Length: 116
Image 1 (cartoon, rainbow, N blue to C red):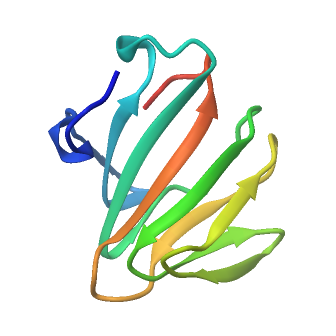
Image 2: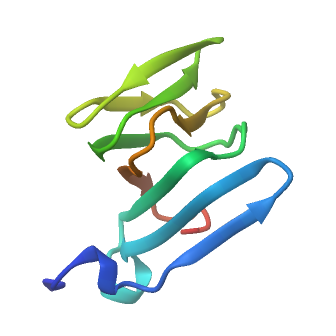
């Protein structure tokens, strides 16, 4: 199955004390027939960040646009378009935008965990 553009997938806005200016979309998942993986696209606006969190599953991230930082191994690591990150299961992590342009990244997770 081929989709026209990720922006056509339904968007979920995240809100709370530990997350700011983040939206996510499931672009390939259960609804598209994927049985092994889920692909999500996240956008983190200026001054935005994902929650600092851990979970049992690994995930792989490809940074498509913008600039930011990933909290991993107790330190912030800069990312830019073309950067990749591997987050092992059980590892504390967070992503934040460090510029004015929107930070856009693709995140892959195994099937089973909540898709968003």
